[in-house]
Image (cartoon, rainbow, N blue to C red):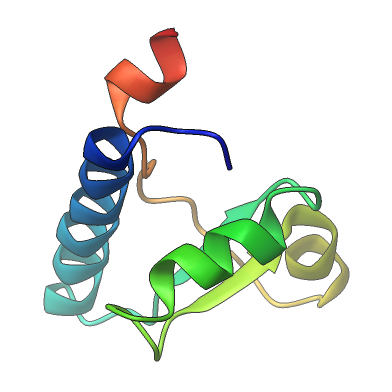
Length: 81
């Protein structure tokens, strides 16, 4: 991913916050993303969130398991540019 370090930190912080909220609510969290982003996003998060599953949308929807979207991990500045 070609994003400056400050924006990457914002993305990781957003992931921590959202995943923490989901886990405090008593749910298992999975990050679903576009297939092309999956490898880069996993590499980005593995250092600080080694236990989180990062799956592509097709992997999530093809599993036949009920999924509830509870939030979006993003850094508004990274998306805007």
